[in-house]
Length: 241
Image: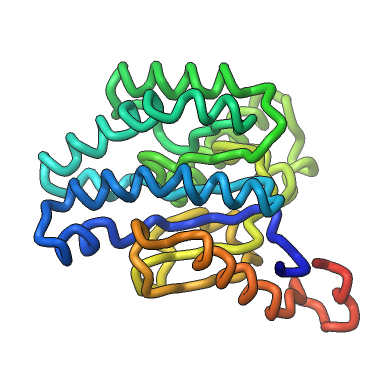
């Protein structure tokens, strides 16, 4: 096993549509299998000692996709949560959601609120579902919140530090250690720009529905080979990991 396991892993779940196309199936078929893959990867990540798993499931730009695909993606989380609710509870997962909550259906919003409330005291793996999420929007929202609190006197100008700004993000979580993107694309696509400031990037050609425990091991092994200097020199940061 790798000597160091990242505390916070973020994954861009890419390639569902291409996975389905290779099988001569509609794109929603790939999304369905991609959703079911989450449970497997979450369980394995938890067994390794990962503390936070952030998953990019639906972006603010994904609304531009065909209506039938968007409609399916809006209903998919509801089906998923109902199917895996008992496993979520039994595995002691804490579920969080990052993203806008103004455009999704009332039914989905109700499920999101219930999951967050019912798992808020869980001590196991934190699964941060990034849904209707865009990092530029998140940062814009954080700036507005900080502005309002400055005007109200809740905080002072000298209080505004990177640590405080992180607190104003959708979720106050540790910064990302390892960012994985499946399917061969090599860009962030507006995903956790703030949180990925010093993360290590790992890109793989494997499509998300095929990304398994062995592939996660490969990503973590690659992470262990990196020299995370955080802007310093190697001998100054040798104990950062």
